[in-house]
Length: 366
Image (cartoon, rainbow, N blue to C red):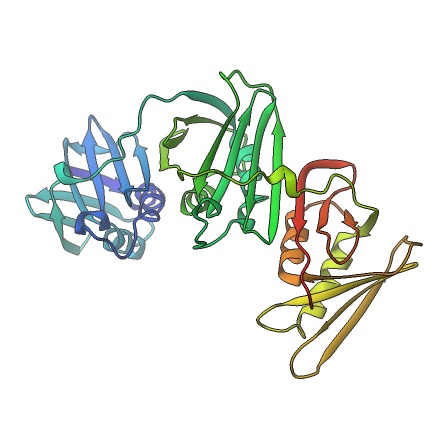
Protein backbone atom coordinates (compact mmCIF):
# COMPACT_ATOMS: atom_id res chain seq x y z
CA UNK A 1 0.00 0.00 0.00
CA UNK A 2 1.28 3.47 -0.94
CA UNK A 3 -0.24 6.92 -0.98
CA UNK A 4 0.75 10.57 -1.35
CA UNK A 5 -1.37 13.41 -0.03
CA UNK A 6 -1.09 17.05 1.00
CA UNK A 7 -0.95 17.55 4.76
CA UNK A 8 -3.91 19.98 4.81
CA UNK A 9 -6.18 17.50 2.99
CA UNK A 10 -5.38 14.75 5.49
CA UNK A 11 -5.28 16.61 8.81
CA UNK A 12 -8.96 17.39 9.37
CA UNK A 13 -10.35 13.96 8.34
CA UNK A 14 -7.68 12.24 10.42
CA UNK A 15 -8.46 14.44 13.44
CA UNK A 16 -12.16 13.65 13.14
CA UNK A 17 -11.56 9.91 13.03
CA UNK A 18 -8.95 10.00 15.82
CA UNK A 19 -11.38 11.79 18.14
CA UNK A 20 -13.49 8.68 18.62
CA UNK A 21 -10.47 6.52 19.51
CA UNK A 22 -10.05 6.01 23.28
CA UNK A 23 -6.65 6.66 24.84
CA UNK A 24 -6.92 3.48 26.90
CA UNK A 25 -8.21 0.35 25.21
CA UNK A 26 -8.73 -3.30 26.06
CA UNK A 27 -7.46 -4.25 22.57
CA UNK A 28 -4.32 -2.62 21.08
CA UNK A 29 -5.93 -2.33 17.62
CA UNK A 30 -8.68 -0.08 19.06
CA UNK A 31 -6.00 2.59 19.46
CA UNK A 32 -5.40 2.49 15.72
CA UNK A 33 -6.97 4.14 12.72
CA UNK A 34 -7.72 1.93 9.72
CA UNK A 35 -6.29 3.36 6.47
CA UNK A 36 -7.58 2.01 3.17
CA UNK A 37 -6.55 3.14 -0.31
CA UNK A 38 -8.74 1.96 -3.19
CA UNK A 39 -9.10 3.43 -6.68
CA UNK A 40 -7.64 6.79 -5.65
CA UNK A 41 -10.02 7.09 -2.68
CA UNK A 42 -8.53 7.19 0.82
CA UNK A 43 -10.80 5.85 3.58
CA UNK A 44 -10.08 6.44 7.29
CA UNK A 45 -11.95 4.56 10.03
CA UNK A 46 -11.84 4.88 13.82
CA UNK A 47 -13.88 3.02 16.44
CA UNK A 48 -14.20 2.25 20.15
CA UNK A 49 -16.67 -0.62 19.52
CA UNK A 50 -19.55 1.66 20.58
CA UNK A 51 -19.06 4.42 18.02
CA UNK A 52 -17.53 4.29 14.54
CA UNK A 53 -16.49 7.16 12.28
CA UNK A 54 -15.64 6.70 8.61
CA UNK A 55 -14.51 9.45 6.27
CA UNK A 56 -13.22 9.51 2.69
CA UNK A 57 -10.79 11.72 0.79
CA UNK A 58 -11.13 11.70 -3.01
CA UNK A 59 -8.38 11.88 -5.67
CA UNK A 60 -5.48 10.55 -3.59
CA UNK A 61 -2.52 9.25 -5.56
CA UNK A 62 -1.28 5.81 -4.59
CA UNK A 63 -1.47 2.03 -4.77
CA UNK A 64 -4.39 0.06 -3.36
CA UNK A 65 -4.03 -1.57 0.04
CA UNK A 66 -4.90 -1.18 3.72
CA UNK A 67 -3.25 -1.09 7.14
CA UNK A 68 -3.75 0.30 10.65
CA UNK A 69 -1.49 2.63 12.64
CA UNK A 70 -1.71 4.33 16.04
CA UNK A 71 -4.27 7.09 15.61
CA UNK A 72 -2.84 9.57 18.10
CA UNK A 73 0.77 9.29 16.91
CA UNK A 74 -0.19 9.50 13.23
CA UNK A 75 -2.32 12.57 13.88
CA UNK A 76 0.37 14.28 15.97
CA UNK A 77 2.97 13.66 13.27
CA UNK A 78 0.74 15.22 10.60
CA UNK A 79 -0.16 18.11 12.89
CA UNK A 80 3.50 18.97 13.53
CA UNK A 81 4.50 19.00 9.86
CA UNK A 82 4.53 22.34 7.95
CA UNK A 83 1.19 23.44 6.46
CA UNK A 84 2.42 23.03 2.90
CA UNK A 85 3.97 19.61 3.52
CA UNK A 86 3.28 16.62 1.30
CA UNK A 87 3.00 13.28 3.06
CA UNK A 88 4.01 9.91 1.66
CA UNK A 89 2.81 6.73 3.41
CA UNK A 90 4.04 3.22 2.62
CA UNK A 91 2.99 0.06 4.46
CA UNK A 92 5.60 -2.69 4.76
CA UNK A 93 4.01 -5.54 6.70
CA UNK A 94 4.15 -4.71 10.42
CA UNK A 95 5.64 -1.25 9.74
CA UNK A 96 4.19 1.85 8.12
CA UNK A 97 6.70 4.44 6.91
CA UNK A 98 5.63 8.09 6.82
CA UNK A 99 7.89 10.58 5.06
CA UNK A 100 7.64 14.28 4.35
CA UNK A 101 10.63 16.22 3.03
CA UNK A 102 13.56 15.22 5.24
CA UNK A 103 11.29 13.85 8.00
CA UNK A 104 10.84 10.10 8.29
CA UNK A 105 8.74 8.14 10.80
CA UNK A 106 8.33 4.41 11.23
CA UNK A 107 5.13 3.35 13.01
CA UNK A 108 4.08 -0.08 14.19
CA UNK A 109 1.26 -1.47 12.06
CA UNK A 110 -1.38 -4.09 12.83
CA UNK A 111 -3.32 -6.04 10.15
CA UNK A 112 -6.38 -4.25 8.79
CA UNK A 113 -8.16 -7.62 8.64
CA UNK A 114 -8.23 -7.60 12.46
CA UNK A 115 -9.76 -4.14 12.68
CA UNK A 116 -13.25 -4.42 14.29
CA UNK A 117 -16.26 -2.84 12.58
CA UNK A 118 -19.74 -2.12 13.90
CA UNK A 119 -22.04 -4.54 12.13
CA UNK A 120 -24.99 -2.23 11.57
CA UNK A 121 -27.56 -2.86 8.85
CA UNK A 122 -31.28 -3.33 8.17
CA UNK A 123 -32.17 0.30 8.78
CA UNK A 124 -35.87 0.54 9.64
CA UNK A 125 -36.33 4.30 9.42
CA UNK A 126 -34.56 6.83 7.21
CA UNK A 127 -35.03 10.58 7.06
CA UNK A 128 -33.21 13.68 5.89
CA UNK A 129 -32.70 17.05 7.53
CA UNK A 130 -30.22 19.92 7.42
CA UNK A 131 -26.94 19.73 9.33
CA UNK A 132 -27.58 22.94 11.22
CA UNK A 133 -31.06 21.76 12.25
CA UNK A 134 -29.74 18.55 13.80
CA UNK A 135 -26.82 20.39 15.40
CA UNK A 136 -29.19 22.97 16.88
CA UNK A 137 -31.38 20.27 18.44
CA UNK A 138 -28.38 18.60 20.07
CA UNK A 139 -26.68 21.83 21.20
CA UNK A 140 -29.84 22.99 22.95
CA UNK A 141 -30.19 19.78 24.96
CA UNK A 142 -26.84 17.94 25.28
CA UNK A 143 -25.65 19.88 28.35
CA UNK A 144 -28.50 18.36 30.39
CA UNK A 145 -27.36 14.75 29.84
CA UNK A 146 -26.31 12.78 32.90
CA UNK A 147 -22.69 11.72 33.27
CA UNK A 148 -21.84 8.24 34.56
CA UNK A 149 -25.23 7.92 36.25
CA UNK A 150 -26.23 4.46 37.49
CA UNK A 151 -29.48 5.09 35.61
CA UNK A 152 -27.62 4.35 32.38
CA UNK A 153 -30.55 5.44 30.19
CA UNK A 154 -29.97 9.05 31.35
CA UNK A 155 -26.38 9.07 30.02
CA UNK A 156 -27.49 10.21 26.59
CA UNK A 157 -30.15 12.05 24.61
CA UNK A 158 -33.59 10.75 23.74
CA UNK A 159 -34.26 11.12 20.01
CA UNK A 160 -37.97 10.98 19.37
CA UNK A 161 -39.09 10.67 15.75
CA UNK A 162 -42.71 11.23 14.82
CA UNK A 163 -44.66 11.96 11.66
CA UNK A 164 -44.81 15.66 12.58
CA UNK A 165 -41.13 16.14 13.43
CA UNK A 166 -38.13 15.34 15.62
CA UNK A 167 -37.71 15.98 19.34
CA UNK A 168 -34.56 15.68 21.45
CA UNK A 169 -34.77 15.41 25.26
CA UNK A 170 -32.03 15.15 27.88
CA UNK A 171 -32.19 15.01 31.68
CA UNK A 172 -29.90 14.17 34.59
CA UNK A 173 -32.75 13.92 37.09
CA UNK A 174 -32.25 17.49 38.36
CA UNK A 175 -33.01 19.40 35.17
CA UNK A 176 -34.46 18.70 31.75
CA UNK A 177 -33.96 20.14 28.27
CA UNK A 178 -36.38 19.61 25.39
CA UNK A 179 -36.11 20.91 21.83
CA UNK A 180 -38.14 19.99 18.80
CA UNK A 181 -38.17 20.58 15.07
CA UNK A 182 -41.50 20.55 13.28
CA UNK A 183 -41.32 18.92 9.85
CA UNK A 184 -43.45 16.31 8.04
CA UNK A 185 -41.75 12.90 8.00
CA UNK A 186 -42.65 9.78 6.07
CA UNK A 187 -42.02 7.06 8.64
CA UNK A 188 -43.78 3.84 9.57
CA UNK A 189 -44.60 5.06 13.08
CA UNK A 190 -43.31 6.94 16.14
CA UNK A 191 -39.95 5.81 17.42
CA UNK A 192 -37.78 6.60 20.44
CA UNK A 193 -34.04 5.87 20.62
CA UNK A 194 -31.43 6.87 23.23
CA UNK A 195 -28.15 8.11 21.74
CA UNK A 196 -25.17 7.71 24.15
CA UNK A 197 -23.39 10.72 25.60
CA UNK A 198 -20.12 10.11 23.74
CA UNK A 199 -21.92 9.71 20.42
CA UNK A 200 -23.74 13.02 20.95
CA UNK A 201 -20.46 14.78 21.83
CA UNK A 202 -18.71 13.38 18.75
CA UNK A 203 -21.66 14.26 16.51
CA UNK A 204 -21.43 17.89 17.59
CA UNK A 205 -17.82 17.89 16.39
CA UNK A 206 -18.88 16.66 12.95
CA UNK A 207 -22.04 18.60 12.27
CA UNK A 208 -21.46 21.97 10.66
CA UNK A 209 -23.36 25.23 10.71
CA UNK A 210 -24.40 24.99 7.05
CA UNK A 211 -27.65 23.77 5.54
CA UNK A 212 -26.21 20.70 3.81
CA UNK A 213 -28.52 17.70 4.07
CA UNK A 214 -27.66 14.77 6.34
CA UNK A 215 -29.23 11.34 6.23
CA UNK A 216 -30.32 9.87 9.56
CA UNK A 217 -31.11 6.16 9.85
CA UNK A 218 -32.08 4.02 12.84
CA UNK A 219 -32.73 0.42 13.70
CA UNK A 220 -33.38 -1.10 17.16
CA UNK A 221 -29.67 -1.13 18.05
CA UNK A 222 -27.87 1.54 16.01
CA UNK A 223 -28.06 5.04 14.59
CA UNK A 224 -26.24 6.11 11.43
CA UNK A 225 -25.77 9.65 10.18
CA UNK A 226 -24.24 10.30 6.76
CA UNK A 227 -23.15 13.64 5.36
CA UNK A 228 -20.84 14.24 2.43
CA UNK A 229 -17.64 12.23 2.87
CA UNK A 230 -18.27 10.95 6.40
CA UNK A 231 -20.45 8.29 8.02
CA UNK A 232 -21.11 8.15 11.76
CA UNK A 233 -22.47 4.98 13.40
CA UNK A 234 -23.21 4.46 17.10
CA UNK A 235 -24.78 1.78 19.27
CA UNK A 236 -27.95 2.91 21.03
CA UNK A 237 -28.56 2.65 24.77
CA UNK A 238 -30.84 -0.28 25.48
CA UNK A 239 -33.25 1.12 28.04
CA UNK A 240 -36.49 2.98 28.60
CA UNK A 241 -36.29 6.76 28.89
CA UNK A 242 -38.45 8.27 31.68
CA UNK A 243 -41.86 9.72 30.79
CA UNK A 244 -40.59 13.30 30.67
CA UNK A 245 -44.02 14.75 29.87
CA UNK A 246 -45.15 13.95 33.42
CA UNK A 247 -42.51 16.19 35.03
CA UNK A 248 -43.17 19.23 32.84
CA UNK A 249 -45.75 21.39 34.68
CA UNK A 250 -48.90 21.91 32.63
CA UNK A 251 -49.50 25.31 34.21
CA UNK A 252 -47.47 27.53 36.53
CA UNK A 253 -49.12 30.38 38.42
CA UNK A 254 -46.39 32.96 37.76
CA UNK A 255 -44.80 33.82 34.42
CA UNK A 256 -42.19 36.57 34.25
CA UNK A 257 -40.74 37.99 31.07
CA UNK A 258 -37.18 39.00 32.05
CA UNK A 259 -34.10 40.25 30.24
CA UNK A 260 -31.98 37.15 29.56
CA UNK A 261 -28.59 38.90 29.62
CA UNK A 262 -29.36 40.88 32.78
CA UNK A 263 -30.52 37.77 34.66
CA UNK A 264 -27.43 35.85 33.47
CA UNK A 265 -25.14 38.60 34.77
CA UNK A 266 -26.90 38.73 38.14
CA UNK A 267 -26.67 34.94 38.53
CA UNK A 268 -22.96 34.98 37.55
CA UNK A 269 -22.18 37.64 40.18
CA UNK A 270 -24.19 35.91 42.87
CA UNK A 271 -22.66 32.52 42.06
CA UNK A 272 -19.27 33.75 43.31
CA UNK A 273 -20.43 33.37 46.92
CA UNK A 274 -22.41 30.13 46.61
CA UNK A 275 -21.50 26.95 48.45
CA UNK A 276 -18.91 25.30 46.13
CA UNK A 277 -20.50 21.89 46.55
CA UNK A 278 -24.22 22.64 46.19
CA UNK A 279 -24.11 25.91 44.16
CA UNK A 280 -27.49 27.00 45.49
CA UNK A 281 -29.10 30.44 45.05
CA UNK A 282 -32.46 31.71 46.31
CA UNK A 283 -34.85 33.56 44.02
CA UNK A 284 -37.13 35.81 46.07
CA UNK A 285 -40.09 37.34 44.23
CA UNK A 286 -41.71 40.46 45.68
CA UNK A 287 -44.02 42.96 43.99
CA UNK A 288 -41.95 44.68 41.29
CA UNK A 289 -38.67 42.96 42.23
CA UNK A 290 -36.84 39.66 41.95
CA UNK A 291 -33.92 39.21 44.33
CA UNK A 292 -31.15 36.64 43.86
CA UNK A 293 -29.38 35.65 47.08
CA UNK A 294 -26.53 33.30 47.96
CA UNK A 295 -24.36 32.46 50.97
CA UNK A 296 -21.66 29.98 51.90
CA UNK A 297 -20.23 28.22 54.97
CA UNK A 298 -17.85 31.17 55.55
CA UNK A 299 -20.93 33.31 56.35
CA UNK A 300 -20.38 35.38 53.18
CA UNK A 301 -23.47 36.61 51.39
CA UNK A 302 -24.43 38.03 47.99
CA UNK A 303 -27.65 39.87 47.17
CA UNK A 304 -28.62 41.26 43.77
CA UNK A 305 -31.94 42.23 42.27
CA UNK A 306 -33.76 43.24 39.11
CA UNK A 307 -37.09 44.88 38.37
CA UNK A 308 -39.87 42.55 37.18
CA UNK A 309 -43.57 42.85 36.48
CA UNK A 310 -44.96 40.96 39.46
CA UNK A 311 -47.68 41.94 41.94
CA UNK A 312 -48.50 38.65 43.69
CA UNK A 313 -47.61 37.12 47.05
CA UNK A 314 -43.93 36.79 47.99
CA UNK A 315 -42.33 33.57 46.67
CA UNK A 316 -38.92 32.14 47.60
CA UNK A 317 -37.38 29.20 45.69
CA UNK A 318 -33.88 27.65 45.72
CA UNK A 319 -32.11 26.47 42.57
CA UNK A 320 -28.71 25.25 41.43
CA UNK A 321 -27.26 28.40 39.87
CA UNK A 322 -25.25 26.42 37.29
CA UNK A 323 -28.40 24.80 35.89
CA UNK A 324 -30.12 28.17 35.49
CA UNK A 325 -27.08 29.76 33.82
CA UNK A 326 -26.63 26.91 31.33
CA UNK A 327 -30.30 27.09 30.32
CA UNK A 328 -30.06 30.87 29.83
CA UNK A 329 -26.91 30.45 27.69
CA UNK A 330 -28.68 27.92 25.48
CA UNK A 331 -31.55 30.31 24.74
CA UNK A 332 -30.92 33.00 22.13
CA UNK A 333 -33.76 35.46 22.62
CA UNK A 334 -33.38 38.84 24.35
CA UNK A 335 -36.23 38.02 26.75
CA UNK A 336 -36.93 34.81 28.64
CA UNK A 337 -40.23 33.53 29.96
CA UNK A 338 -39.58 32.36 33.53
CA UNK A 339 -42.30 30.09 34.93
CA UNK A 340 -42.48 29.78 38.73
CA UNK A 341 -44.96 28.66 41.38
CA UNK A 342 -43.71 27.83 44.86
CA UNK A 343 -40.72 26.40 46.74
CA UNK A 344 -41.67 22.82 45.81
CA UNK A 345 -42.30 23.37 42.10
CA UNK A 346 -39.93 23.28 39.14
CA UNK A 347 -39.00 26.36 37.16
CA UNK A 348 -39.36 26.54 33.36
CA UNK A 349 -37.43 28.72 30.93
CA UNK A 350 -38.27 29.30 27.28
CA UNK A 351 -38.49 32.01 24.65
CA UNK A 352 -41.67 34.08 25.10
CA UNK A 353 -44.44 32.57 23.00
CA UNK A 354 -42.21 29.74 21.74
CA UNK A 355 -42.32 26.33 23.43
CA UNK A 356 -40.31 24.40 20.82
CA UNK A 357 -37.36 24.62 23.22
CA UNK A 358 -38.06 24.34 26.93
CA UNK A 359 -35.83 24.01 30.00
CA UNK A 360 -36.94 22.75 33.38
CA UNK A 361 -34.94 23.06 36.62
CA UNK A 362 -35.94 21.23 39.79
CA UNK A 363 -35.98 23.24 43.04
CA UNK A 364 -33.50 22.59 45.85
CA UNK A 365 -33.68 23.20 49.57
CA UNK A 366 -31.17 25.78 50.81
